Image 1 (spheres, rainbow, N blue to C red):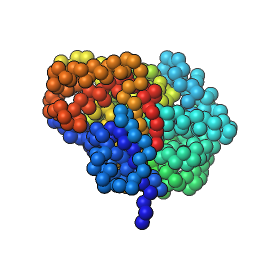
Image 2: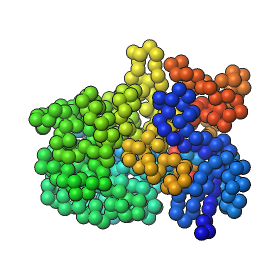
Image 3: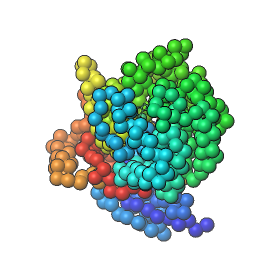
Image 4: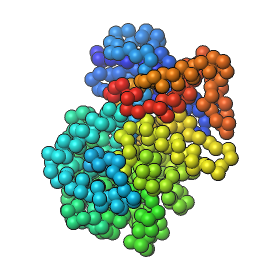
Length: 462
Ligand code: GUN
Ligand code: ZN
């Protein structure tokens, strides 16, 4: 067969595993300084990635679409938790989660009863994701089935891998945003049949969180999961202390917050829990055992005052987590800004630790790509440039302004005098990568990009 090939030449990076436990973190990734990413144009999949010269010889007929000498290609970013209806109210001032929900969120979400508004925001929202290099997201809609249909339709038009579902919410919310046990079941069922596994769409059964559903409604959500075992569950868990107390008083017979969901058949491998800032050890043990997904949402955890996600504890307990923006509780649509907040909170959370272990740039970009794919159980389809993988990728500029360029030159200048990578902390082994290796200085350059970059560094998203 005559396969139509297209290729992109650039610095090419992808992760094969979590760098956290590697003695030399570079061993967790593949990087080609002068690389060629060869794609099957018709299928939209990866044929292979490799060194430019080698790939050029092997794929002699390939059309090189773009040559980016100084740009970086990596798998598209994964947003493991976000709310598209909250797009227009991002960064609204409030003293607590509940005040914020009542004052801004619920009135904004009411607008999605209007399909035309839902379509307009769907377009705006997915475009915003693409401008930030995000190619896959697990997204909250509203209780209105129209809000789900609008987002899926736009995702199909853009051929994006999007997971969403109808919010189920039948108490502790304004009348105009409540559904019923039967209605939420029927609407969810219809949407699963219309959209789940259609194109690249996947359905998530979505009770907002335990306080806004009765036990009956949570049970119906669990029943849907039983009927459609390959759908997702998407909800919030242990975001802040007031919420945890509230859940305790609403479900006194449950051992902990996760147990509320578990009792309704909602804790599975394809379940994704947003926040998980205040999990107890039994909850962590359960999450490790199930390997469900968790979304770490640092910009939101800071903005709404939820608390600090226990990054090291989560990694060391084998929790399967990726990054989430949690727009509009989160303050930015993109993964670069999200990683900046993660880095800082991880530093602050170790204020009393003598031998701090910062989150390295490799760990950060791993979480924003392959780590997120794993949290969404999609790591066999996206997140690597291996043969057959879906070819979602982002082209990043290392530097887009004067200070980024100056900083970048500083890395190369310092390297020529010290002969050693510097982004490795005292508590980690020094990088053994030597000058001449493709991966030399990669950690330092990625650290600059992670800490200084934003959507302006996203050149294009494919
Ligand atoms: N918990 C329940 N609903 C929400 C929401 O919309 N945002 C956040 N951050 N937490 C929630
Ligand atoms: Zn949320």
